Image (cartoon, rainbow, N blue to C red; front, side, top):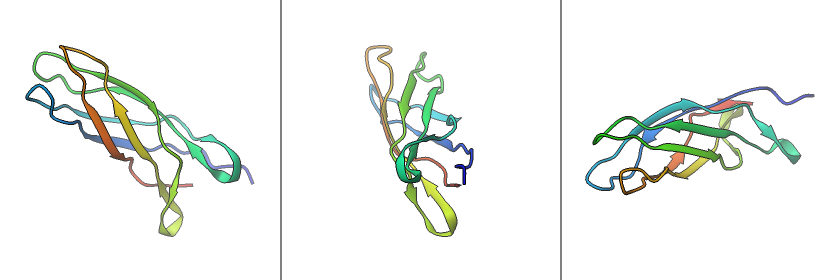
Length: 99
């Protein structure tokens, strides 16, 4: 059986650096499969405009983590681009999806 094509929504709020934080939201790329149905997703985007600037991010998610009912999530951890003299970070999970 071929793996099912799927994507994940991701959103959140970055760390507070230089007196502010940024929000972000987007949809991952399709699953990139490895052995044993393990897979990752490519994630990229731009944060909200805050304090007269924005940041960009670009990362591969962590491996899938199975949940009950055929759903799964991926850990996401990234550092934004260096803009306006600082970066922001984010650690969390994407929205659950079925295989």
